[in-house]
Length: 456
Ligand code: SF4
Image (cartoon, rainbow, N blue to C red; front, side, top):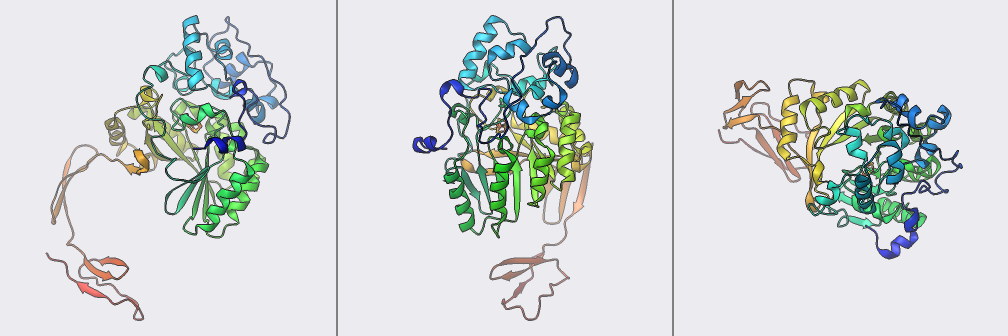
């Protein structure tokens, strides 16, 4: 969270320009945009339902080479309800209400992502993620602005240090699509900032001085809204810090702006191996040929791709929806990593599900598909408590000698519990070894060892 003096240092736009078509600074986009195309809504057309047909309906004058240019996609985001109305017909009342919602929680969606919406379906899962809902306001008092208390763990502006060995680097609050379930919704009204050079220097200095930091997560907003050149300059500095082992990038670009994963970006990332990338698919319909190609380009460049989805009411809150999503991800070699309980953020209550839903989904998947396809269901605890994994209960009873377990079919099994281990208590901790197979410590071990047989 930034103070008012910090705001002046950042590239904050005047109110009228917030999240406008031009909200990416010229410094970050080195080329001029090819020009904004009019959205040509034709009421005579049938709703398309698939990408290319939709693309040609609303952006039919856009040549492919322009459509596939991420900077064009970015600059031509739909950011006003009036523009949206040309694509998705809205009643006068809807328009008035959505304008009010967008004043508090702005709207931004790329032409590409918009084109995935099936206009025939009012419950379309892409639509629910990208298009404002009046429920963001009517249920707006529930939840808090910063449920994870990132402000509390912010050590210098933009750098969150919560866990001992890793830090989160928040480079910008700009995203190609403003997801209606976003945990950082509170940042949207600040109007599109990018960290200043001085702020970046302060973040790098902190990482250099803190030798416990072995993992740096570059996030936002979406850091891939910055130019490749700018990212290169930051990542090269992080990579030069000897104690930093891995760099992770958190981005939704493969899903909402796959054009961004171009050869230039991939070549740059390859230089700083090992780099991991976490993305955010929530529904199988987001796994388009374009998205699959983007992930493939990353994988071929040596960048592993993991998925962190959010459990969302009416979007992916069923065993079927999650199974389809995770199977689709495995097909494009993206690992389903986390399934997050939707955070208790103001303006997202209508999309949140009871915690039991997530546990039931994991239970419904376990045994019916490979463990590789099952993400870890987690709650990110409020007040910065960190992530807690939640699992269905498979242990029905437990004693020192035996466990009673149920399997995925509900069948009950007894399992003999091996005898408790012998512990070799070391001054620096406890090392355990099974009874009857005593540990072979190196003779020159400087640590005095006391062996204790645990009681039967
Ligand atoms: S891409 Fe991530 S940070 Fe950006 S709006 Fe969506 S959820 Fe929020």
